[in-house]
Length: 255
Image 1 (cartoon, rainbow, N blue to C red):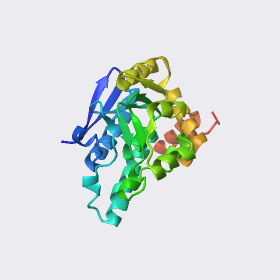
Image 2 (image 1 turned 60 degrees about the vertical axis):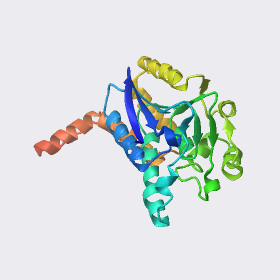
Image 3 (image 1 turned 30 degrees about the vertical axis):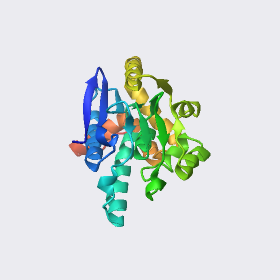
């Protein structure tokens, strides 16, 4: 049965895609599991990092399960498959804690888009990247033409999406898409996650939001999130809440 399994290693949560007979292809059930895990982990102060990886040595994720989306009518495909996937991938991208894609094997289509939604990626030397959607008559649907183009040069994305060429792990590293290459991508990701014990979680959260604002990732929400966080830390906010609850005039001091 295809699923996502969550395990804990110190302060890191590891989410493993388990659909090995289909190269860890994503079903909608798996996407909704991912969504649920992210919601729960977001609120768990004991968890400092999320690592995504795939079961087995061959594939991180080779995209969406064609047996599931193939029979859908065009409107259903656009409305429920593409839009729902976007919503869940966006949650991963905007997750407040650091995220690492431990790319243990090939990352194709939706799997590459999933890796792109992580903060950084560590790739196995044997892994490759591809956007093979045109070979089955569709286009990248979970931000392969959008978010991925902010992480890789436009001509490289076109090379994959239009000509069907695969990108090696070494080339992905040379282009800056992969932070590191390792024989064991998950072990390297866990080593990196352990270093978060030396940094402030709150500072990390704010810094991540600021970087996302700089690159245009959910910029409007980033601006309002940072402004709201600053307002919530003020004495005026406490005074305003007190006055509202006690039904008395507020005495703001600007502090």
